[in-house]
Amino acid sequence: MRRRKTYLDAFGPVLAGVFLLILWLVVCTVQAQQRRGALYTLEASLPKGRITEEVLLEMEKLPGFCGRSVCYGADAKITIGMYTGQAEILGVDLDAGILTLVLSAGEKPAGSRPLLIVGEDFFQSLKDAYGHAATQRQQEILKQQLGELEAKIAVEGAEGKSIADTAQFLGMAKESGVYMDASLMRAWLDKWNLPCRIRRVSLVIRGLANAESAQESLCKAGFEAELTG
Image (cartoon, rainbow, N blue to C red; front, side):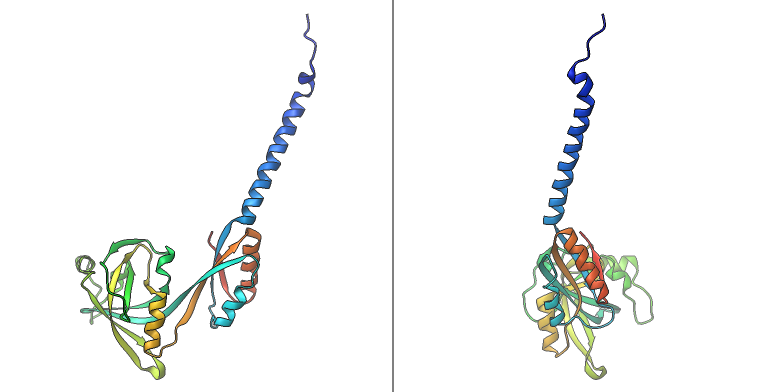
């Protein structure tokens, strides 16, 4: 005997399709709400020109703006013993978690003396007076002595004059470069009457649409802007 088709037999696939459609719409709505409420980081630099305090105030007017951190920079010659290297010292907020410390050089007393964090590849860039790079063995010795090492820093001042000071090390980071706490760097440069130039700004923007709009606005204004998360 043939089984009589039931209501579910006839409309079951349709109901299943409707259910899946509703579920997909709910997921899309939730994801859209998350994107609207999520925080995104926008890294901005100005290759031609200077980032002034007035420019920073204008950035705060961007839709979705939640906060910012500033990276300062100074080109310097760093000498450790018989070795010298050129580097851009970046002044950053060390409490912001942007550096991954792989080696600590121990606690150092706070003051006006520069305290540096260097990248793992920093010692590879050092050369002696004859242009010879430090050997692998010599690099390892310097790393092991990081807590006791002192470095001479020379920064170009006004009218071509070079300003020299002595620095110590706080540690070594996974990231490439040479870093100093931003507030310490500002005080240090101010002591020598040197300008503290802003090299990069990290903006925190709420909402993906706002972040993409801010990125477009900054690029139109001559910035290099990268959405990092």
